[in-house]
Structures are given as structure tokens and as C-alpha cells.
Image 1 (cartoon, one colour):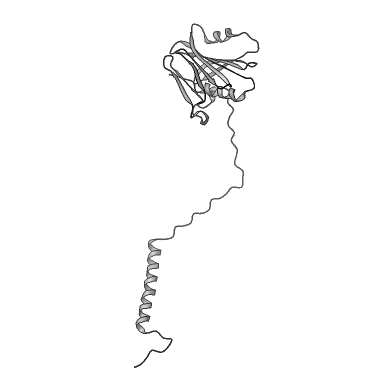
Image 2 (image 1 turned 135 degrees about the vertical axis):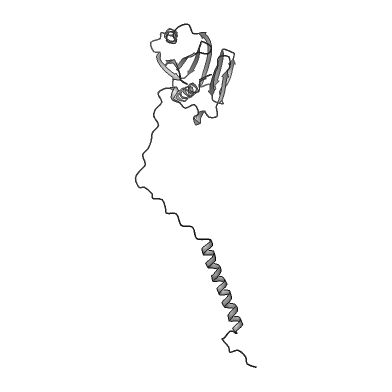
Length: 201
């Protein structure tokens, strides 16, 4: 009986190995055709030039403050159905007096806000604004709040402010009074934000 020489494989083993190699090669070719490698996206070009900085335009009065700004997004809304207006205010502000024609808000010890609609309009709004106080330090300006033209009176030394807006639905003047310390800039900013939320039905 002849034994295979050392170092040589029997023909059936060689055939089996050849079939395995062919099977692996065929599998790799089929996979390469069916599932091609995705092309690599080119890396974006990074500009070395600085991008321009866009600064927000300054707001001249409360009418320019966006009603849906991030700072007022979670505020409460007070609605007066009789006089047809609504106003938003910070969550930590409390209503101390609430009647049909008047509402008083307190913002801790920072400031108070008084809104009333008791005066009927029987003459131009500017006349009411001019006769309220003849104090020479009072400033007097026209404002546009929620698309309604009115007047804002300011007394710097106290710091007090009074906004008069005509309410065409009830033919009354919506008076919004505010008082705080002259140095409290945050209270003044909050007051202007509150004014920006006034809406008439």
C-alpha cells in the first residue's frame, strides 16, 4: 500500500480547499457589487474670514418689543372682557385689586402697576395728557403700543410713568400707571415689556 508523501495534500483535500477559496472570492465579489461603499462626503471648506456680526436695532419705545419674545413667553395674561383689552405680566407679579374698571398689580417691592378705564373720551387724547400735570420735569411723548397711538408721561425723580391709550371699543381711556425707584433699571425694562403686550380686541 502506497502512502502519500510527506508535505503533499491528497487530491480531494486540494479540491475542497479550492472550492472554499472560490466560494469566498465569489461572495466578496457579489457583496462588492450589491453593497457598494458609500462615497465619502468631501469635507466642508472652512472660511478663514470672520463672519459679520449683526447687532439688533435699538428699540425706541415699548411698541417695538416683540410680543412673543423669549422673556415674555411664560408670562400670565390678564383679560378684561368688559373693556376689551388684555395685558401680560410676569408670573411672580400678583394682582392686589381687581374690579371691572381697575386692576392693580404688585411686583414685590420693586414696583406697582395700576390699570383703569374710568375716564370717557370726550376730547382729543392729547388734551387729557397735557392737563394731568404741569410739573416742568415731566416728559411727554407720543407712543405706539400694539398699533394704538397714545401718550406716555414720565416723572424722572420718582420714577413714575403714566400711559394713556384710547379704547375705541368702550370709548374710554386705558390708563396704565407705574412707579418704582429712579435707579431700578430692571423694573423700567419690565414695565416697557408689559406695555408691549397690551392688546385691544
